[in-house]
Length: 287
Image 1: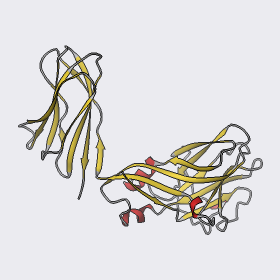
Image 2: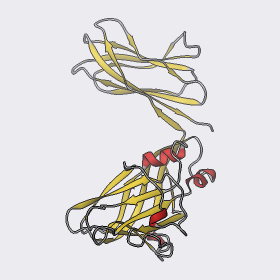
Image 3: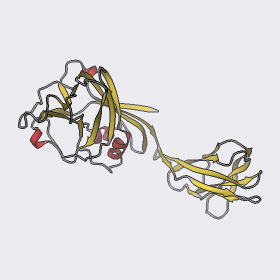
Image 4: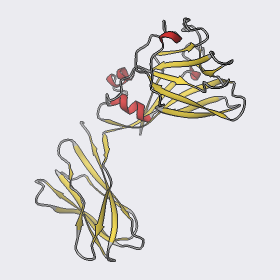
């Protein structure tokens, strides 16, 4: 597992109470309501993720396993219990030097990620933003930045450090864990094994840059015992046994990295009718 991290290129808060003011000189970020209706704070953060990929910090043909937004919480006005911090994609662009409450980006009603903050908590918190970062990486989600919101129905504002704070160890950070190569997890296939004779999983196409396939096999029927073998082919018609696992009564996996264009699992029950679930996983690399 490889890790890269980056700090924001933009981070600033906006205030409903000061709707036309810009706070780009502040070393802090705020989210939530401070003192009654009309006094809501939101924060905006953007990471230059495209630049990160261009510089091969996260190389092309990689699989992002996890991504977290790290924030250093220094101000906590939550009276009791906890509040939910929400991370949403920004629909429109913003400039930290000019943005105000009245010009803040639009964002969806549903949060892309959330985290609970308890009353009395201070320090580093991590918000799981894996799905959002994967969207940036695959160009399925535009990277216009993030909108951070807190509880806007009661007085429970929270505050974080930003990149204008003197201690860089307290700055917001995006931490990404990835592996080189593209991992694809296919839909799980349920296969009913007859009393006698084999059954087959759907063949997986291994052409192109795919270098390895693993079949994760779960035995659903309690007490069942299953013979299995991994079959490979270069033409999709003539298949040959690559490896196998005989008389399994527990969940197991079959993997192959031999040159082939197709692969499937042949299964046979030793204990009568049985049901198994097969989940193929492929790995490919452009290197």
